[in-house]
Image (cartoon, rainbow, N blue to C red):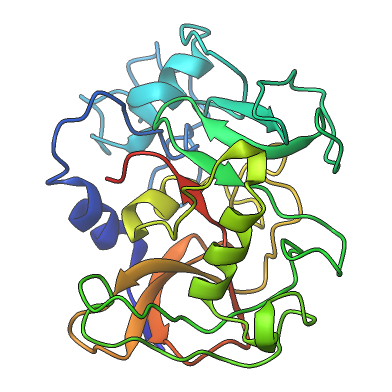
Length: 268
């Protein structure tokens, strides 16, 4: 398992992002710190470390959507923790109230739209016989030589309770199954890029490190695959760990602790 420090990778992923019509969510971190503890002084106080003129300048807590939300100055289309802005989407594709519950009926909640990135995400379920059950794991597999980084990965075995054709539990088979079911009326579901999946990380210290109101049934024990190959070692692909909020790269044939959450929308 190749692991990468979170802070440098954040800079790598977002520093050179091209301009899009949509934006990027914040991290959920709106507390400033000195070397050992959280700031206990109001930002308006000259002694506060939340001031850029202070001893610990340029902290994430001072900027962006989270800071605006803390100041009650952030309008949202939907709702969500801190600077995040999500809307629940029904099986029939319609937008729902924040109080909607998961289910299989046409007007039950099944997907979550990020109103900042304009991406729509699959929501996992708690039914073990459902292909979208949160506990199913998968091998990484992509037979398209133009997008698999030079290594297709492994077709896998039955690690998803026989919910996929031929009991081959891999990422490509899962994408095919979800598109065949037209989840939330859409048939363009795909694996997220590492940058896209990382936008869901909620860096407030919670486990799992995601807004659980809009992404329930998220395993907090391991890694979610991305569609991004690790080009320095072709038989590996990037994943995001929603226990720690870190990214890493692991063998494409590793299904024992690797989950999947699909996405749709313009890729970035």
